[in-house]
Structure formats: C-alpha cells, structure tokens
Image (tube, rainbow, N blue to C red):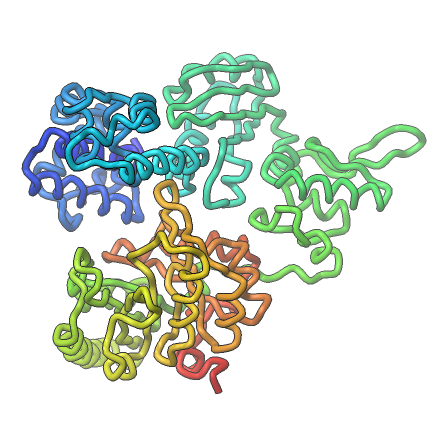
Length: 584
C-alpha cells in the first residue's frame, strides 16, 4: 500500500469522525497524520521495515498501529467502523474541496442527502436554502464546488500517480515471461498531472504475460486484451494501457510510448526529411525496395536519436515544442540535476507550522550536502500555521544567530544559515510584516495564503504590488494551486513575469508535491524573459527537504539549467542576486 493510499484512509477516518461529530482533538490527529504522510520522502513500508515509524514526528501509538494494519492487511478496525457508519458516497461529498464534512453532516441529517448526485439535484432545485444556516449563496457555492471537483478529478496529481505506477511496474516485471517493465507516457515525462497510465513490457512469452496481467490486484476491469496490448481500469479509476513487445524492441517501444504525440509527429517528419522512417519499433531506411532497420536489437533510446543524427533528448522535454530543432543545432540545455543544488530558500520550523527545530533543519541540510538553508516561517496572518508576529520574529532572529554560532563551531564556514520569512501578500498588495524587520532579513518570500477568489485584475495588481516592494526577493508558489484540490487563482502571469524581469524578483517553483507551482510553461516563459528561478521543497520537516525532486521535475520540463536556478549558486552570488537583482 502506497503512502497516498494510507493517507486517503486516514483522511476518510477524519472526515467520517467529523460527520459524526466526534472529538475534534482526535480528528486533528488524523488530519495531521495525512499532512505528515504527504510530506514523507520515503515509503511508509520502507520506514516500517527498518523500524522507524516511531521516529516520525506526530506519529503516536494509535497512528503507528493503524499504519501497520494498513501496510499488512490493507485495513484497520477503526477504518472499517467509520466507513460502515458513514456511507462511502457521503464521504465522497465531504472530500469535495469547498464543501467539507460539516456541510455534508448538516445536509445529510436535515435532507437525507447521501450522494454527490443528490446534493447537486437539491442545490439546483433550491432545497438547500431551506436548511438553517444555508441560503441561495451557499447553494451556488455548492454547485460551483461540485463542478470544480469534477474538473480537478479528471487528472491525477503526479505525486499520487508516480509511486502507484512504480509499484505496478514492479509487479508487471515479475509476471511470467517478463524481462523488463517500465512506466511510460506523460507520467514518465513527469507532467504534474496524468489522465491515464502507460506501461511498456518486454516479454519472451506474450501469451503467458497476457494471461497473468488480469490477476494483478491493482486492475479492476480488463477492457481489451491481446498479445501486444492490454487496456484495463485500475483502482485509482484510471485507464491503464500496457504495451507488450519483444525484449529486443523494448527501447524503441519505450521511446515511442514515453514521448508526447507532437514530439513523435515532429520526429517522424524529421526522419522523413532525412530519408528515414521511425515508428514504435525503430528507425528504418529503404534499400532496394526493402525496409531495413538501422538500429541494433536491444537498442536504447539514445540509439533511436543517434540513428537520426540527433543527440539524446531527455524524456521531460519530449512535448513537441522546439526540442527537436534545438537538438538538430546542438543547442539542447544541460538540464538541472538534484546534485546541482547547494541549498534551499523556503522552509519552515517549529516556530510556525513545521515539526523540526531550526537546529534540526540545519543539520538535515548539512547531511544533504547543502552549503546554506533559509528559515522562512510564516507571518502572523496565517494564524492556523502559528505565524510569527513582530516580537516572535525578532526572538527567532536571536535564535538563528545562536544556531549560526553553534554551527560555525561544529562545522566551520562550510554551511550558512540564512534568516528569512514567508510573508503574506495582503489584499491591497501590502505585506504582512514590518518593513524595518524585513529589511534586516537575508530572504523575504512573499506568498498568498488567503482570499484566492479575487478577480484576475485584482489578484494581478496584488502580486504586482509585492513585486514592486524592495524587500521582496521571491514570489512563493505564484498561482496558489493545490493539485487535485484547488485550481490556480486567476492572474495575468505574463504581467507578473514582466514585472519580475524588470525588478529582479525571483519566481519560485514550489516543490511541495501538491503544488509544483509555478508550472513548467510559466517557468520556461519566465526564464526566457530573464527571470531567475528558485526551486524549494517548502519543507515543514526534516524529511520534507527531500521533496525537492517534485520541483526538479517541473524545472527539467521547463528546460532549466543550473544557471537558471539561483539555489545552485555559491552563497556570495546568491546573496548578490537576492539583494541586487535588476533593481540596480
């Protein structure tokens, strides 16, 4: 069972408890467990195997016990009790962003509504406004939430799909006749959401492999079956396409079914313009009227491109933009790697809503080989995150200074702890913090956490005001999206990018798996206009620092190099960029 599957079960327990009016302390414990699991950089199964569940911050005996139950038998007594007491359809209503358990409980009790369909019908028939505490505006917001929920559920976030697909690929690899299996499609290109799952499987016995695939527990229905292709539905409610081929064809098949359709079309045209042909089985030329392969059996993806006279094109770039033209003229970017990062610039501690102290976060950064780390806890507006008011922020700066001294005594000058804050951008564009304090900090990340539903013009003006503020170094998670839960707020990103280019303000790719914000399109556009990028895990724990890879996927899809991302720089250059930028 994946981390996400376990988190979903804890979320359902919490929702069911809230619908039933259970103790809020217990509900918060399960919701906290969900947040903690989502931030883990390691499978719970692996953590349990090394006896580390008790080391997870916030995991008490009850959560540990239920986690073990989920890992060993896929369920636990409380989960079974809660899901029996509250119908699954009711929990599905509660899970829709913008509706929630309290609303569902009131409508279930008063109108007997037990499904999303019934809820939508009641709202359209204006029956919800008859319930105490509800009105016409609430009816409309429920209808909007249902429609928004449908849009958000059409594609699955990468952070859910990727570990699931990796496990399914591993299971496919152990079937009869299979020599190799790998996930392909948009998931392999690391798109932030996926609409289906694709796999390429090399087999020496297609019939035996085909017969075994329906037995996989993840597959709920076989829609199409054959010796070369199997189409199924999985228990994530996604279509699964499994391509079967000979071991010697694996590289060509993987290339074809991993690349975007536009890339494949352009590559076909490129091949034809050079007297060659490419398809899912390789690259060919016609000699004396006979089509002959010009790649060896068992060729990998590099050989496919080499046969066309091209350098290898990384899979993340294969979207049919300009990557083939760039490859043809030798201008492909040297994509950023995780080893290029020297630190992170947007992280939280126990001073606000993190689970690790400043010292613990610093030591974790050092263990990762970083040269610096910025502490950027929340400003006071975010009360739910225990944001820091003026006095607490000043007190934190004193602690940071003390930790700096202790780190220097232990590690010398190999690591630097930077002081900062994640300050909220208020509705009028001003900052939720005293400018005299902001001026003393190494880094100021300006973000929006409230009032997402403003019109585009108002939201754009709000962010532009923050960009113009001389204390703001970085705009954090610029579109405010939460994959699968909240759509990006309306904002003119072209205007934002142009302003950032003019002021030297850095744009963030927030690597929190449910954000991956900004997306690859905006990141590339920003880079092309001279805007510097930073990629940060927005970590709230020691383990959270490892979430950087989700932002790395976006950066690579955007074609970014280490030169484009400031937290690959040495510290002196980093600080110069932050404090000077294009302002001078």
